[in-house]
Image (cartoon, rainbow, N blue to C red; front, side, top):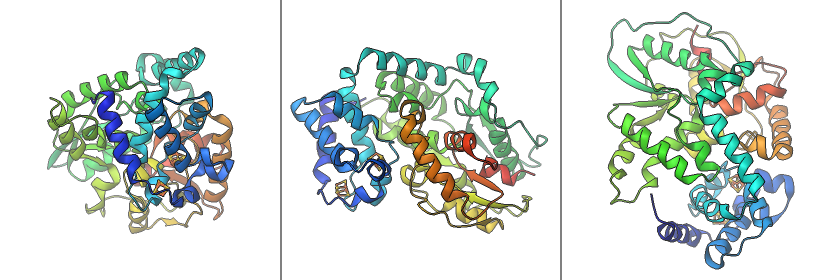
Length: 372
Ligand code: SF4
Ligand code: SF4
């Protein structure tokens, strides 16, 4: 992992690209809600620059950075290619030391709870969203073996998602090996600025996964993190090559299925609305892909207003910023249900659980529509 100086150099490179045009303000969910420059991408870039250059950090700066969803909608809009997500990680890590002790303790507790299956599973099953709904399918002829990332909370909350992925892939002739639940991708630690903890998990995963031929993710929040492993190491780091390999071999399930013949899959007659997770459309730059697969399979999916905006789930955001998160969820559900769909589908467990809590209609992962 880079030292703080290398991180500063990298941050400077990113900051230099910003021409202060302000285009990103129009698509930033927190700027839309709060109307304050310091809750916009441009304002936060300014705060990070001050923190790195002058060590100028106040409780206010921490609050404005904490309010950022890390949705990366600003990256999609930015004409100068500012890698805001990477800059935010650096900025947050640099000012983490200023956080009050009680906040550090609560963030530590949430991280440990969510990423330790022995802890999470004791309570997580009470919030189970869906049980396995179809029999296990075995491939008739195996053409290739793929590694499926289980995720740390998804197997407990919605086991039917990876079950559906496994069945779909079996029908297409793929044998699936699933990673153990304890192999968390590191995203929760990374986003809560527990950089060392994240790095431990990431290195462990790289050692375990780098020989796989194809790595598939069914949770876009994990997929975006694993695709980023390659950028976390210096070229002379012993993990650099292996990290690059893991990132390059990782695909969201939508990417993997996009060029396959899906005619063997049965579909159901449902009018659905699709919620595109930020981690898929802005993080992985795969906006429109799931929509086109659903359309190809005959699902009616009406366009959703403000589809580029975050639903407010954003990892642990709904825990630490409940007010803003709820506002974003209410707006998102209004837009998703405007066409009276029978079901909402999405591509990330965090969004799914968050939306389902206040949705009157079922919310599912889109792959569940393909396993009948
Ligand atoms: S981040 Fe990009 S869009 Fe936003 S002000 Fe800077 S250059 Fe403009
Ligand atoms: S990541 Fe999202 S919330 Fe944060 S500044 Fe960019 S658009 Fe705004």
